[in-house]
Amino acid sequence: MDNVRPMQQPSVFAQMVDKLRNKSEAELKILYLRFFKNDLKNEWKEITKDSNLKKASEDDIIKAIQKNRYRS
Image (cartoon, rainbow, N blue to C red; front, side):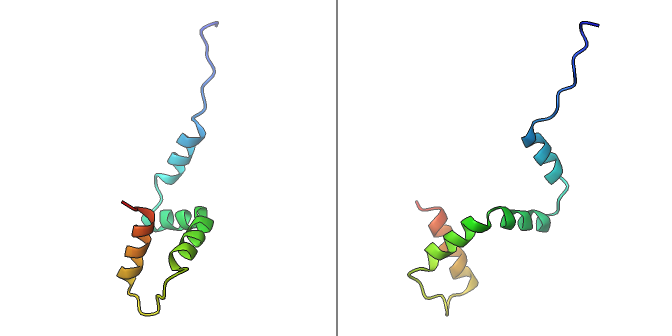
């Protein structure tokens, strides 16, 4: 009986991955938006503080976000 070991629980990270594994892309996007809501708001404020986006296309907005995030 000395060789009996208690079963180890999966790590919290492994549990999170298991719960997310079967989510649809739409569900994952919603979770991402909820989780990073404040970061996204702050990022948008930073991007638009000196911009006039009244005539901007969706592509222009996406490019502005990517430029802000992935500065070379």
